[in-house]
Length: 384
Ligand SMILES: Cc1cc2nc3c(=O)[nH]c(=O)nc-3n(C[C@H](O)[C@H](O)[C@H](O)COP(=O)(O)O)c2cc1C
Image (cartoon, rainbow, N blue to C red; front, side):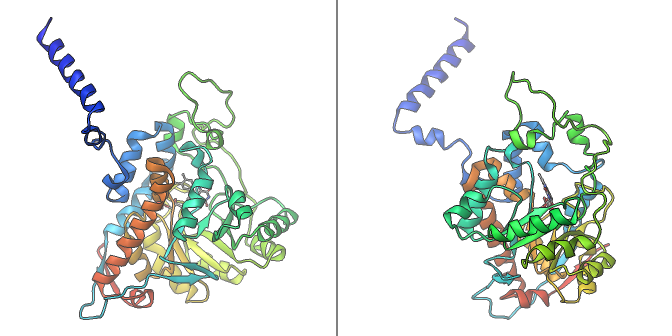
């Protein structure tokens, strides 16, 4: 017998002995556990190894050259918070209420389609994590069981619009009747965008509902991703759509996708109850500006008339602190909870939400802001 065979057999034998021995937990501890992942970046790294490449790329990716996707993160690296000291930060309060929705931390789960690429029934799993952590949730699907159960879910529905006034009115009425606390109207999704990663992977948008095919499984194509495919969603939607939603219900309309002071002013003028400064996480127009860079001018245009939310690139509590110091009332997070979901299901989502809230609270304490009002008064330095 060759030496290497012998040593391989010995190590296999010792592994088998270990598995049956009281030291087995030690061996299992070598596997990654929830506690091993100490920040959102590590959750993403773990998902990159664990998820199917099609699923990972669908979530992580942006559009075309991913300039906007990168810019969202780079913008945070150019902002520095000027801390204030000798203030009592023995208690730090991160809570607030926006449009009647209480939130323990200024964090809202953003709408993200395609969660079933990660796990079956993933929207419901994320909704359960939202309830467990008292985090407001934006989603178009996955909440019906929780609503039936009477779970204390703070839920804003999400739509990219529908073609007619009648359908908008009916939609708004249905969401209000089923317990929605608001409607998030996404305005930057007139067409299906051109996502190179999906095109390269021969992704099928049908997988967003069904998940990625198992090895050896063949499926008829439903909506294959193709370069520069001309796929209209709601190309004829204009500002009057807000009024149509308001006609159908009394719940607030939150306009998501604002990137300019002009559109912010129009959103207010047409009756929006809040806006989200967003570029869809770099997934619609490549070359759109990083959200953090336009946030101050948008917030200035709104001038406190309605809440200003923002998203894009939030991976750390300090990112939330920067966004609020620069004019946001709260942030939405898109990919971060999905990395929690992909890593460890509902406990993973809860951990990511807890982690971001805890990091935010600690960063506020270290910056000398005992509550969100104090945080809004902090100054930032932006390097060009
Ligand atoms: C996988 C995925 C799916 C998304 N689906 C939607 C959607 O259906 N509607 C929408 O308004 N935004 C959608 N977004 C954008 C998010 O709501 C949010 O604007 C963005 O993810 C924020 O950036 P972040 O991922 O860096 O936090 C999606 C984002 C991701 C990553």
